[in-house]
Image (cartoon, rainbow, N blue to C red; front, side):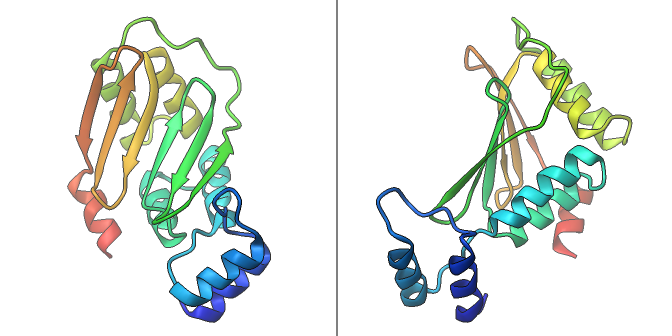
Amino acid sequence: MKELEIVEKAKEGTRTPKPGLEKSDVLSMLILYSGVVMDTRAIEECTRLNFEGKIDFGENVKRLIGAGAVWYCVDLVQLKKVSYGADDAYTESLPLTDTVKVGNRFSARAITDAIAATQRKETDYPEFLRRLIAGGCVYYVIFMKGRKMTYVGSLGESHDEDFPEQLIRYLES
């Protein structure tokens, strides 16, 4: 990203500064370091398009990487998603309705079934989240650069998956 683009994004307020920093401080730091800035509008658009069923997981990941995100965490108890960049984070609420209570027992089988149904395009993103919740998942983390996913239950149980090869090929295209 060119310095001018970074400066313009800072002026637009698309960066979530660390607490205590003024916008002018952030702008100065951006000019000085020319680091990658997360585009929070693009991140919000990914979430909206996911919930509308207009993009799939692969396109979501590709767009989030393009927006400067490195990894993200979806909290299924508070219904929030936090996207993390190289040195900042952006939190947004998830517009999930008709949710069920988080299941009492973590079921790796329920998690893998939800993932498989989504990969086969049998469910949309909101239904995928509902299935994770019913399966006892309290949050999940997508490590986009590491190409891994981790789903976690309330007692620390977890299920890890690597990105499927076809997704890796898509991201590299």
